[in-house]
Image 1 (cartoon, rainbow, N blue to C red):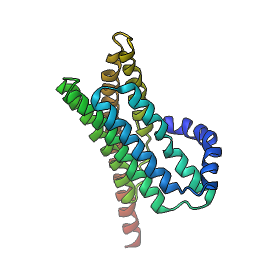
Image 2 (cartoon, one colour; image 1 turned 135 degrees about the vertical axis):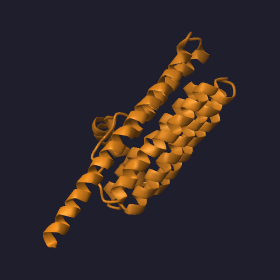
Image 3 (cartoon, helix red, strand yellow; image 1 turned 90 degrees about the vertical axis):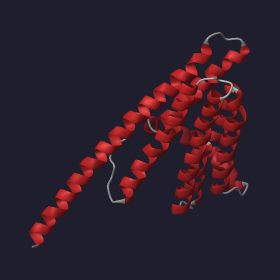
Image 4 (tube, rainbow, N blue to C red; image 1 turned 90 degrees about the horizontal axis):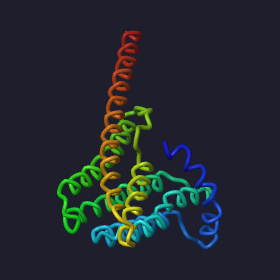
Length: 220
């Protein structure tokens, strides 16, 4: 849902910056790699120590690379299958670092195995949600469904609430409860989205099989 409305806006905003990087000889692949490294550093250096505010600040600075690299490729006319593959693959790595950071916190200083398990579920379900679409498309299906919570929603909910929860270290009372709330929302939403995609793929498989059978009968 957020992809539909936010991506076009941020693409327009970031276009001048993308053009600036191209003039300096920076490649889209380099932006992809640097952005992923920055997200991983912010998530794994700060989140396991419970420093959610500063971790979120660092991650937010780098997460927009996901829009900048594609913008650069379009401006330079160098969009390619390799670029799309690299971007998609490293998106999964960055997401795993974010939720892995949460899991490490709750396994240690956060002292909650339940929330550690929820964070791990968010990590795993996010990967599977992406896989279902990729796998469906690889067998020739459109997988024509957006779903309740996709990658953009997972990141926005998690990062916003983690950043706000981090204000606890500045003396804001009781605000740390926002992160567990965010993790539960992402976990439930991801489960619903996974169900939506599985149901859609099943329906599209049935329709494709029926169309193939009809074509065979007509040609017989």
